[in-house]
Length: 198
Image 1 (cartoon, rainbow, N blue to C red):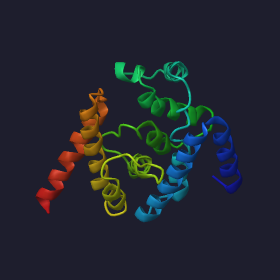
Image 2: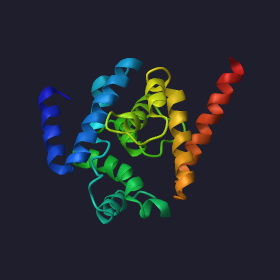
Image 3: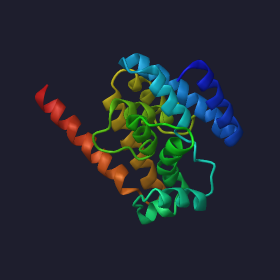
């Protein structure tokens, strides 16, 4: 994305998103770019995924459902009733249809930034992490530790975010999306195997 395209995208997002969501979006894009620099990843791709990760967040649930149904996506019952979960999948479809994104890695980073998934690419981990640690966040547990970890070991950071998220959801009694649990189990096993061979 060249400078003019970037400016146009930011202007469009500013007009589409609620102000607080727009500020969050800019923070995630900046944090994702910083993480990309840290891990030797394409900064432009990381920033683009960060800018678009919440592009469907301000839509109502009905509109999100229509976008996903039109795309023929299979949705779980919990997704059908939760804009907090559904905006990721709707956002990936919107990024493709409205914003012209064709890069599957960027689309997956948007699609899975809320729940994660087993075997995430580096970009997916970057957006998953940036969304959690961006400077405007202030209520997640262990934020200082997680923020430091993000620039030391992205895999350890992803595991810590998943662990903290599941722990928090357990205290609220909220229903846990099965993909989040599956992602946590995957990265927990990877961590155990890595430590076994060290």
